[in-house]
Length: 199
Image 1 (spheres, rainbow, N blue to C red):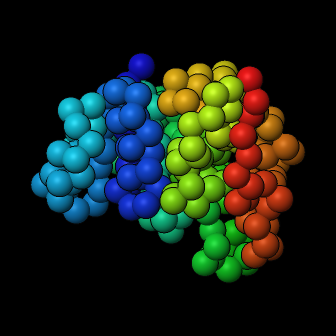
Image 2: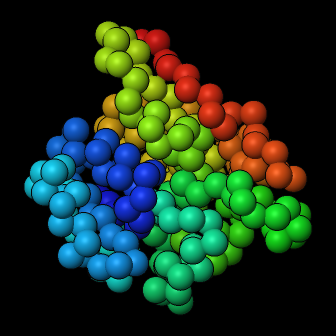
């Protein structure tokens, strides 16, 4: 299984740090090109390597860490995503509810990535908190996941475990996953909840 992060803003960088801490290889890309990532990848070490967006999209699991409004630019890399897993970390705090047409933001992202399997995850915490809990024996920071594809959700849950998190699967996007979304301009009940799992 190979991994890529699309987006090098605060969330993309926080995810890259999580991979680097566990020495798990991951590509990272942004719209400005690999050369702009040199200082970040040098800081994080050899497990994090810069790629173009096009090359990063070849990965089997892709962490979408761009602003919600930029997701179509990534989605157009392929007409058919052939079962790749897209981990949607986006939020829609600055998008008018009417622009979503009554859909959850992840449902819109899923429609853009034709043929992909989407998992909503790693979006419920501010980047400054993601993966930064003090190491306390027997505790791991909780990461919530939601997907309409149970196998994809289980796969991402396994990756989250490898990264040192405690994955909590919530079920389908339109059921258990609703609290991970901004609905009618209001954040769902799980957003900003920095929880840990004991044991």
